[in-house]
Amino acid sequence: MKRYERHADAIAQLIHSGALRPGDRVPSVREASRTRGISPSTVFEAYYLLEAQGLIHARPRSGYYVSAQLPVAPGARPAEPLPSRPAPKSTGVAISELVFEVLGLARERDLVPLGSAFPGLELFPLDRLARCMASGMRKLDPWSIVQSLPPGDERLRQQIALRYGLHGSAVDAEQIIVTNGAMEALNLCLEAVTRPGDVVVVESPTFYAALQALERLNLQALEIATHPRDGIDLNALAEALARQPPHQPVKACWLMPSFQNPLGSLMPEEKKRELVALLARHGVPLIEDDVYGELHFAPQRPPPAKAFDGQGLVMHCSSFSKSLAPGYRVGWVAAGRFATAVQRLKLMTTLSAATPSQQALSEYLAQGGYDRHLRQLRRSLAQQQAVALAAVARHFPPGTRVSRPEGGYFLWVELPARVDALQLHRQALQHGISLAPGQIFSADRRFAHCVRINYGHPAQSRFEAALATVGALATALASPGPGA
Image 1 (cartoon, helix red, strand yellow):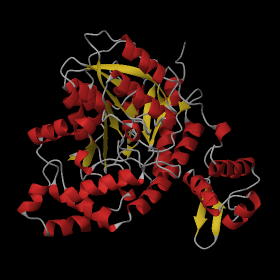
Image 2 (cartoon, helix red, strand yellow; image 1 turned 180 degrees about the vertical axis):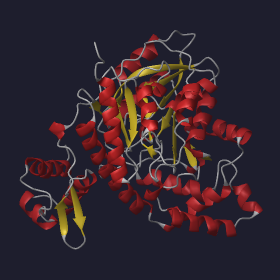
Image 3 (tube, helix red, strand yellow; image 1 turned 90 degrees about the horizontal axis):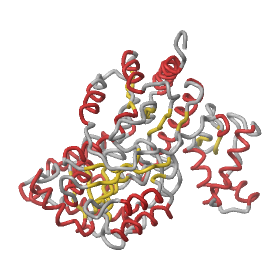
Image 4 (cartoon, one colour; image 1 turned 30 degrees about the vertical axis):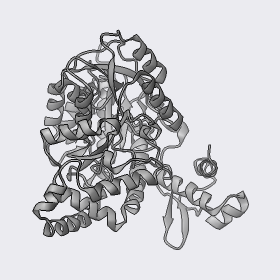
């Protein structure tokens, strides 16, 4: 545990024990630095972490105070979900019809979007982005359109490469291909390294769009046990790689090492290093989905697996859709040794990402302020998570388990076995609430008693009431019927 984490833990214990009560002022940075023998920057990091957890808040020119509405104390929370136990063999994928049904039923504008894949639009600097877009449109000419062809707008790629460097990863801008969102980047990478019938490793559970991509390309899914806290089981992955017959080896891994959707798991740095080394020994490309990497609650961004890639086997995919500009559809891939293949596929399919969107984001990043926006966004998401965990603890049936992510905006909720998630989803829709049922996150539709909950929408009164309703519906489904 780092020094700032130890200090944050000490303050958290005082709050949960009642020694510091809601409204109390916590020790000033100067006082804490003097009495604890730590630097002011360490105290600031500790207080930033506590603020992200919803335990304290800052008052301008006054200091830090214990929040009025505290998250649930660690001992009062439901237990974590159990690690998954998927089938040991690869399987074909036929999940799209179920996904279309679930998503199709949840398109009403007035629904409380607990099943959404996006955070609330009010969390983003849309007005400033619109001004950057308008400025770019005034400068648009035929040459700028040509410059936006793959690999994409040069200024934007340089800005993206700079952010890699700031986070400790050396990525050449020439390796970066700008795409129509991260989903296109991920699909292009998958297409670049597989052929129909090939086996692809995914987590269990995994994001339903990954399964749809495998289905579209007629690929086999090999699901690997995954822990809700620290990600894919490397021992299980190593066994699976060794177990595959020589005529049908694993051709790629599509994984989300940071704040995985739907679990929210975060692989520790050392496990990421081990993952990259394991796949390198087998010559297996890693398609790294890292769209939530910027949404960390700790002071430092967790390094992607790409940071440990010495052979160009990691294709790191991300976008601005979850962190800055939803709807602008600007993503990218740092494709390593596969950059040429991915760039050619991009040209052959959708030609280029939209020029105005690329230029708007390039201008926004050049002006500065992105990190300030991210700090506020992370703070809002962390506070919303605290609200969601408290509501699940209060309203959901006994035996419920829930993940506790260190970033992102999803909770994975494991309900009592009697609860059917699809039935719960349909009942919730009748109350104006959407959910993401667990069956869409696996090729064989397991996780039938699990749901993914999006806590990234800050309308708290509506949000908390919706969680209370879902909890009541789940409690009724979990109860034995008459004569049972």
